[in-house]
Length: 458
Image 1 (tube, rainbow, N blue to C red):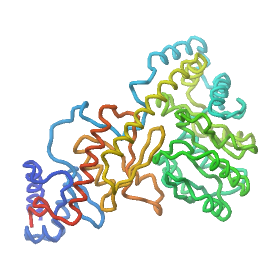
Image 2 (cartoon, rainbow, N blue to C red; image 1 turned 180 degrees about the vertical axis):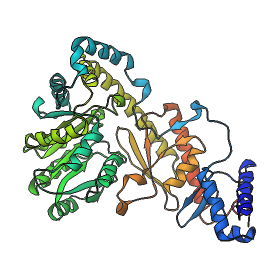
Image 3 (tube, rainbow, N blue to C red; image 1 turned 30 degrees about the vertical axis):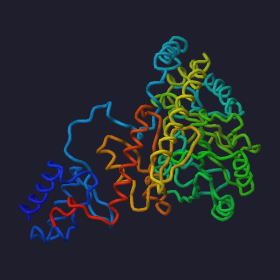
Image 4 (cartoon, rainbow, N blue to C red; image 1 turned 120 degrees about the vertical axis):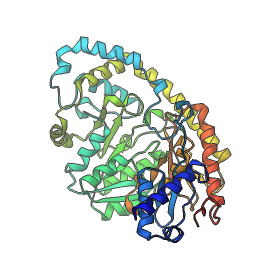
C-alpha cells in the first residue's frame, strides 16, 4: 500500500511542478485513480489525505478534490493584494501622536496607571467618551459607560450573564460577526437567526421571532455590517426598537464603524430608545489601534452592577495605560483629526472597489453596495464555492475571506466572499477584482467540461 500511495503523490507533485496541473484543477475521482494504479480506494484516499495535509490539494464535499496551488517562488510583499485583513490601514495610524499621549499619560497619572483601577474604567476617560459619543448621537452619562477590553469581551459577558427580562435565547442577523458565533457556540447558548440582505431584514419575521422565541437580546450591526456592508435606515431602526420594547427584548447595538458614516442624519438605534432597551457598544479596534484593546459599552442602569461582577471574574479591570493614553488623545482633539482623515480614506477605497466590481465582475455575480465602511460582500455563481475561490485567488496572491464561517449552520451559504478595503493598496484594487473576475469566468467555463489536465491519470 505504501509504495502505491507514494507513487500517486509523487506523480501529482510532478504534474504540479511541470504545470500540467494548475490552481483550481479538479483531480480524478478515487475510483478512477484506483483503477489507473491498480490499487485499493483506501490507497488513493491516503495519497489525497497526505497531499491535503501538505496544502497541495483540498476537498469539496460531494464535488471531489482540487488543486490549491502550484510550486512557486516566495511572494513579494508588493505583489500581495490584501482584501482579507480587517484591521485599520497602517498608513493612516497616528503612531507618533499616540506615543506622545502614552508618555504624557505616564507623566500625568504615574502610579495610578500601574495599579488596580476602577472596574468601570477611568472616570476621566468616561467623561471624554461621553463627549465623543455625542457626535454619534449617543447621549448618556459617565455612570452608564463601562470600559472593556475590546468589544469581544463585552459580547462574551453579555452572552453569559442573565438579563432583566429573564429570557435565555439570542437572535442575530445572518450572516454576522464571527466572534459572537464563537462565543455562543462555546457557551452552548440557544440561538436564532434572521436573514439580512442589502435590502434589510423582514420586520414581520422579526416581530414573529420576538413574540414566540423567548429572545434575551438581538445582536445587530446597524451601520456598515460585517460582512455585508449593509446599513439600516432610521425608519427601520426606530421600528426595531419599538418591537423590542413591545416584546421585552434587549438590543445589543454594535456600532463599530459608525464613525465612518458620511450621512449626518443617520442615527444609532440608541437614539430611538427612551426606556433603556438598547445596549450600545463602540470599539476602537477598527478605527484606531487594535492593540489598545479598548471598547466602551453604554448599559441600562439596572444592568451595570451585574455586568461589572461578570467583568471582574474575567479580568478585574482593563488596561489603565491604554485608558489614560486614549483619554489624552481624545481630549487633545487629535482623535477628531484622525477620524476626519480616515473617513476620506475608506470612503475613497470603497468607491474604487465598487466601481471595479461594476466594471469587471460577470453578470451572474452579485455584490453589495455600502457607502463606506470596511466590508463588501460578493455572491458567487451557484457552481462556485467561496472555499474553492479563496484557494484559487491565493495562488495569484489575492487574499479574500470565505464568509461561510459567519453563518449559523442552518443559514450557511458556501458561495459568499467578504472583501475588506481597510488594508488593500488603492493601486491594487482594480487588479484584484480583475483576477477575481477571471477566476469566476474560468470556473463558469469548466462547469460541464473536463480539461486534459483534469484527466491526466485516467
